[in-house]
Structures are given as structure tokens and as C-alpha cells.
Image (cartoon, rainbow, N blue to C red; front, side, top):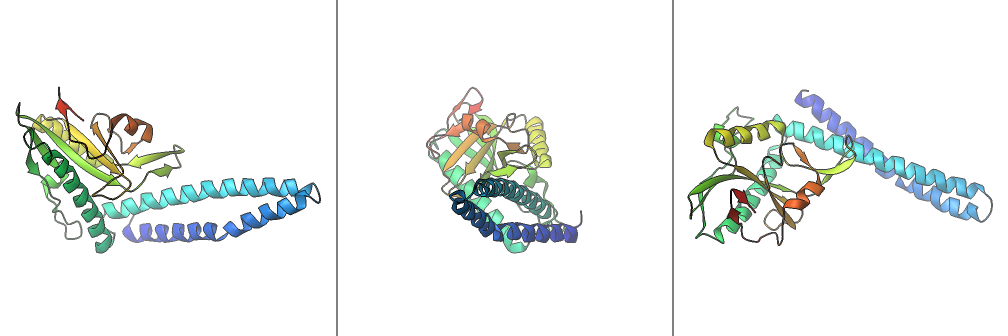
Length: 246
């Protein structure tokens, strides 16, 4: 889809979402009206059931439209069609979380050294692409054994409801990005780990997770999978043993 078509779709979805939100008062009118009629006649129960069914349908529709809007917004970001302010804000949040992760590694500077810290220099609008931008954020060396591994950092404000699979997920990357990380791992013969921050702020997330790229091989991850790799507390020092980062 072209940029203008995507923008039109996003605007259309925003209008539909707002319309649904504006109709919320009608649900309450039916519900409260049903309570009144419940004491007067049997139709009250019918009205309550209708209100609940309408609320259920409205909630599902709202989730579907919001999810679709997010997908279009991601598409717009991929083709460089988002505003400079939005792109800069997104980059700033990513940089803040990278610093957060770097500081955790620095807590054990006797054990970990940051061999390389990759910074995004590409500019899609100007047609400038830097190949190293597709690499993971960090290349880390474990000093006692000189083993190396790569780390990609992702912060997300919240999970989102995926209408297709009807469950909450975290969209941590695009498919092409995952392929880039897999190629990097193979070419450089180093394992890649994904450190995800969730909720809170990029420089102080409520939760963090550290999982191997082999586990995060799809763009979306279920919270039930992430729970197996949660770091408690979120800023606890990293631990490396037998090729696994925790």
C-alpha cells in the first residue's frame, strides 16, 4: 500500500474508533433502563441482555479496529511515512532503554565489556541506509572466558490485543529484523539475546525479560512465554553461564 492510502486507512479507523467510544452512553442508557423495567415488567431483563451483548460486540470491535490501526501505523513507520517528531520520539525511547540495559551490564564491569554499541544512523526519507543498523544493539564480551554474545533491546509500553489470534501479545520486531539478527548470529558465530522492557518508562521499566533469539523467532510473543524469562527485579545484574544470558 502507498503512504497516502495507509494514512487514509488510519484516519478512517480513528473515526470509527471515536464513533464507537461516543456511543458508550447508549449502552448505559439501555442497562439502566433495563434495571428500571426489571421491576416493572419482564422486558427489563431482555434490555439488560441486549445491553450486555451490545457491550461485548462493541468491545471486540474496538479491539479489532485498534489492532488494525496499530498495524497500519507500523507499516507507515516502515516506509518512512510517519512524522519526524513521531520517529524521533520512538528513537529516543529506544535509546533510553539501551542506556538502561548498558547500565545493568556496567554493574558487573569486571565480568562484562561492551565491545560494540550500535547506533541507528539510517534515514529512510533521505534514502540513506547504513548496513550496521540491522545488527543487534550490543556486542558484549564476557571477560573471564572472552566469549561474545549480541543483545537487541526493545521497550514496549504495553501488550496489545491481536484480533486474529484473539489474545494479548507483544510485537517486538518485524520479520525482516528477525532474519537480520539470525544472519548476524550465523555470520559472526555469536548467540543473540533479546532484552525486552515492558510498561513503566524506557529508563525504568516495570518488567524486563531476557530470552534467546531462538525463542523469539516470531514477531509476536505471548506473555505466557515471556514470563519464563522474566528478570526479577527488572534491573538485577546480568548472569552468563554455559552460553546462556539471564
